Amino acid sequence: MKLSNKVAVVTGAASGMGKAIAELYAEEGAKVIVADLNIDGAKTVVEGIRNNGGTAIAVQANVAKLEDIENMIDTAVKEFDSLDILVNNAGIMDGFEPVGDISDERWDLIFDINTKGVMRAMRKAIPLFLKKGKGVIINVASTGGLNGAHAGAAYGASKHAVVGLTKNTAYMYANEGIRCNAIAPGGVATNIGASMKNINEFGFGRTKAVQAVMPRIGEAEEIAQAALFLASDDASFVNGSVLVADGGWTAAF
Ligand SMILES: NC(=O)c1ccc[n+]([C@@H]2O[C@H](COP(=O)([O-])OP(=O)(O)OC[C@H]3O[C@@H](n4cnc5c(N)ncnc54)[C@H](O)[C@@H]3O)[C@@H](O)[C@H]2O)c1
Image (tube, rainbow, N blue to C red):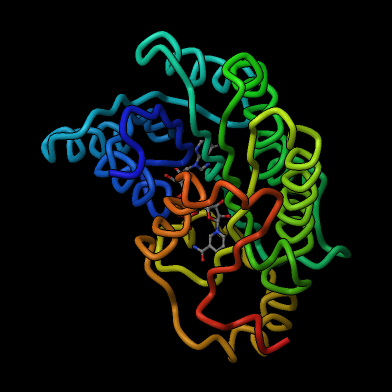
């Protein structure tokens, strides 16, 4: 097993890629904090992990709230005595608004969840990692964090910021045993569509040509395998990278 006795916190773990990552990490021996805004969903994931012989605890956490993020990490330390791996996966889509149509409210919500939540969770984890002299961070960005038009202005900007945060963190703590990488998934079959509210017809229309060259939609389990690699010692020399997992989609651009 690749993650024996490691303690992992995974945000947004009630659904989609976070769920697949939590399940795979548990299969590989990690004790997992399954954190999500949706506590019922998180509890169902934990039940599945336990039925499979794994160890996990559900924690309700809205990553837009500082106290929830702190409680999520504190719970890992309290219940499992440690933190080894932090996966910042929770995120929501925007409504494909171009900058001319974005409201301050939508912008702030997207950034609070997709970007500030990632910064705050890393900020809370870093002192623990420094004390141990090791730690792994994996941020789920997006191909929209590397390219211009996979969603609207707010989503794209929020994920570009996650890529920047990832690289800065990787370099800053490179001599302290801490690795920080991002995954940039392409289109993946999850429930993220539910977070797309009030679709902007103009913005959505502009992205259609980009979507049209996507070879296929990926499965959450395929992203979990990338997250396992980055969390494991197999990736001991991989730091500050953005692993694109998109079936070749953005190779077209
Ligand atoms: N699905 C895709 O095509 C795709 C592509 C690239 C990147 N991503 C990114 O992957 C990550 C996971 O998304 P997914 O596709 O698995 O979506 P999903 O909607 O299936 O799962 C996201 C989970 O995050 C939770 N969540 C939402 N807001 C939250 C908050 N404020 N606090 C805590 N939890 C919250 C949801 O309850 C849900 O369980 C996101 O960061 C998303 O931006 C998705």
